[in-house]
Length: 237
Image 1 (cartoon, helix red, strand yellow):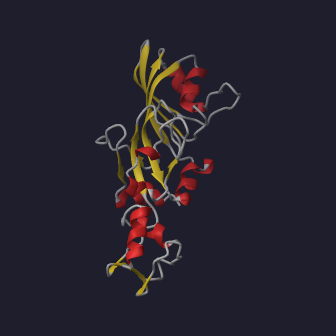
Image 2 (spheres, rainbow, N blue to C red):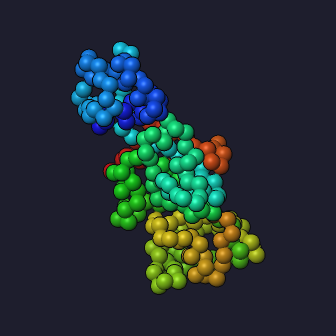
Image 3 (cartoon, rainbow, N blue to C red):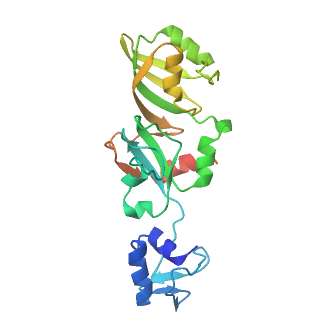
């Protein structure tokens, strides 16, 4: 990889700041000063130092975000703020992307990483990775709905969803529910309730796969996953 990207990803500053380090001649590869940011290095096989200190290569970043409403799950957009816009520069330099998506008006758990292999595993339909949501629903959710969701419901385009686990927390004109699905069709949770004559007015994802949302995170905040959490995720490979 390019040495300027390696240094930026390793916390040595922005690309501009890294360029200044290279210009000063304080960056060495195998003991030889390097000044060209385009120089390619093999960080796992070659020794890279800055001011004589060894650079410890880090390939992947794993972030858990409590996504707020009004922000889209994308890396860039010409009109709306994206989840990547909420990242600090030292995290954004890894060029991460949201794994899966949450609608613009949906809150909650969003995994952001640059690990493409992990993204494939979590999003593959064959893996049946569970995703759990809590929602406020206009209309009385009943045990009949629970049974219908258990076998799958037919969406507006004719698609029949995979079985889902619906738990009624509070039933009435305005109901509170918890729903676990194992796929991610466009607006799926909202469309499932529309299929039974009800409307989702608030939606929040609280878990994905083996990980649950850290409830200490305020809306718009994020943190790196712990080693234990990363191990849980990568065990899905």
